[in-house]
Length: 162
Image 1 (cartoon, rainbow, N blue to C red):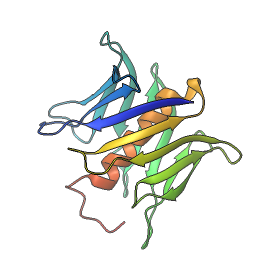
Image 2: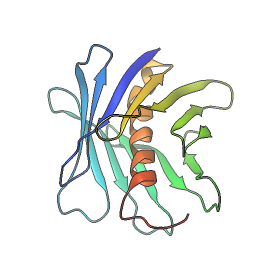
Image 3: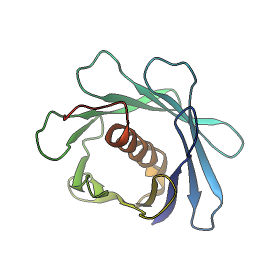
């Protein structure tokens, strides 16, 4: 089980997250680009090498994000139309989100196995999450999905009920 802590950087002109391990060592940094049309973020390692790209697809009625690792698209995360609790589709992986997104307690599953559990840390400065990822090979994609969900659920510019 890999434990990571994701903290959104406060007072930034662009989306920014820092990802730490349980020893409080920064393992990844995620930053958005200035002056981009839609959200466009890069996840880098401690040396600055880009590992993951997250791009918002603007030609969509609802929020839709493409996640690429090593230049190859791995999945798309799309918000579904609902009138109660938020729902998302993760195409390309056949994974599902279970739990309560409004209370920030949810899991990513592949139908049989829990791939990641996410819980929001309350009483912290800025959005802060505890990620428990079951498999080492899922660290990048699971972290990227958690970032997309945070951006869609808590983007101040999105006043939509969907």
